[in-house]
Length: 148
Image 1 (cartoon, one colour):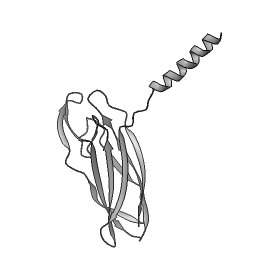
Image 2: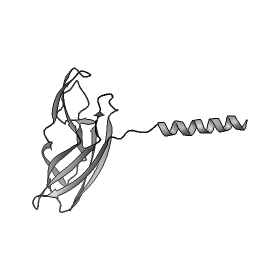
Image 3: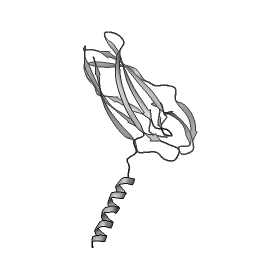
Image 4: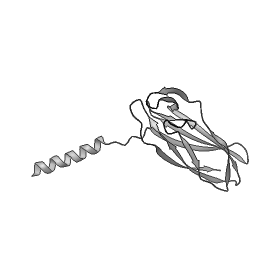
């Protein structure tokens, strides 16, 4: 009976060691004031080797594009759309189309008009990450960026 209990305990523990949650993208953020009434929000994706995320400009019918949602507030207004670096363009057989993606890192920028001297910009990023073997389900990252 002791051997069976020991075997079951070791089996459960070893299963937990192999069931790692993949998180190949780390997000960081900051705000940079460019005038008394304007700032730029900087949202950086640091992507593990071999993985990539998709452009905010990715066409429908393919992978999930990276999408930024900013919580509405009277403290600020968005100016234009999210700016991004030039993505890699490549035909992917899995999607039967050209895809636009970023490897290693990408810094996204959103310009804002400030209606208040100090505020916090809250929101969420939805993104999908893939490598040459698999795609992970779309993931969300919530942010809260202080603008001083």
